[in-house]
Image 1 (tube, rainbow, N blue to C red):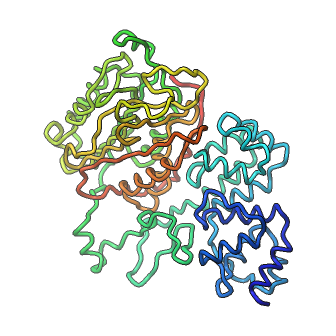
Image 2: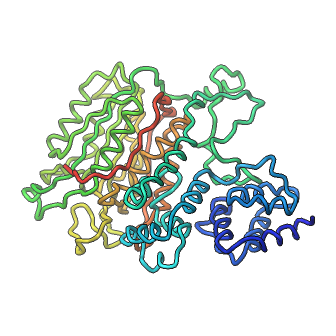
Image 3: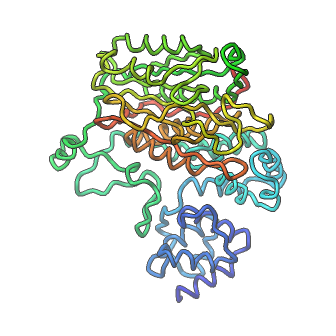
Amino acid sequence: MDFQKALLEVDKSLSIDEVEALSFLCTDILRRKSVSVVGASNLFSLLMKEDHLSAGNPQLLVELLLTIQRPVILQNIKLSLSSPSTLISPYRKMLYRLSEQITEEELGQMKFLLKDRIPRKRLEQKTTLGVFLEMEQMGLINDSSLEYLETIFTSVCPVLNEEIRLFRKEIWQPESSPLTVKPSQTPKPSYRTDFQGDKREMASLDTVKPEKNNPESQENDDVLCDYPMTGQRGICLIVDNFNFSESHKHLPKTLKNREGTKVDRDALKAVFEWLGYEVDIHVDCNADKIKHLFYRIGQRDHSQYDSLVCCILSHGMEGRVYGVDGKLVEIKLLIERIDGENCPSLIEKPKMLFIQACQGSKEQFPVQADGVEDEDETTRISADAKVADLRSPVIADLLVGMSTVPDHASFRDKFCGTWYIQSLCKNLIKFVPREVDLVSILTKVNADVSGMTDVSRRRKQMPQPAFSLRKRVVFPVPKKPPPEIGVITKDNS
């Protein structure tokens, strides 16, 4: 049968709901936030225009029709069922399977729970797949962040979370580490096959490290080496300031408590323990306590450790962070206390500092800032502290991960934590098993967070890592499965 006639037959055989399903499944392939089509023929034209579908390459059509369980159509147009491709991501297929299991009543309950996150008018006429697309556009879900959806399913239909659990099990491949290939081999992607040169995933994130003993890779190893990670990982210090009720003692008015920060703290603890770090958590530290913690870290003997991680979650001003007592601490001072001069046992070892905070004094939009009074007490998005511009390297072997670029705010959800820390943790979970280096992972964090937005769809955020690293930071692949993060609790102590 002529291919164009075959496509017309497919169009005639599909219902409106099935056409919407095909469009949803092609969202990633067409690299669009959503695909609005009148009929299947319109969708097929788009796919053919971008060289995803042709008479000589009908694999995508086969996979689409098998995914929506319409093999009879393939038989009618005489297309083979023997070798389906994997052009549609498991994530997209998983969401489609979920949509098939959700009843009209459950869909209504989902819309009710989402009314504070997505404008009501954008949900009224949406099908389940349409709701999923809205959630993606709002940054509530993506292929590495499904905790919010699990929270909704826990209230609506808990059994649906089993589908998400199976999806995570499908994409996590611990047996692939360490993964080596011969020079003549082409490594398989972890879950998505490139099609007609489509490179939506960052190339560095699916790159397989060459064999250390391979002579052909020796030259590259000499140019860009990895920091040794053969001993104990090291200490992960987490300073998490939530309760600022006493800050009025040194400030004109009391700073607001940092609602949602416990979600970030728990995620950091789970991820860095999974990576093998000795996590040391300190909650509600005053300025002197913060200084003392970094002094104590700098005075410790790190000879048996491979690295150091420090995380600061607090209010602040430019170049400084607040203690819960309302006093400020210079970030430059904290960095100096772990540099090579003050901590010789960390010389030539990576020192990683992650700060969830704004940079600069400007408020880009009228949202609640840590340390700035909010006129609307009902808002669920707040902007975090203001700290220094650390774009220039301060010491060798240092990485400073900032949640946003200079002069802009970063955002914190009172129930789900901050955009930056949650993305950092989820991407570490996703890409450490693939032996991806930390700078590449932070680049993916940049991409994810920059695609997020709040309810107004106007407020955006762009993280910025700064580093003076001289080698790549590649964490050894943990032997145990990754943790599940993003569990929401009511305890903010």
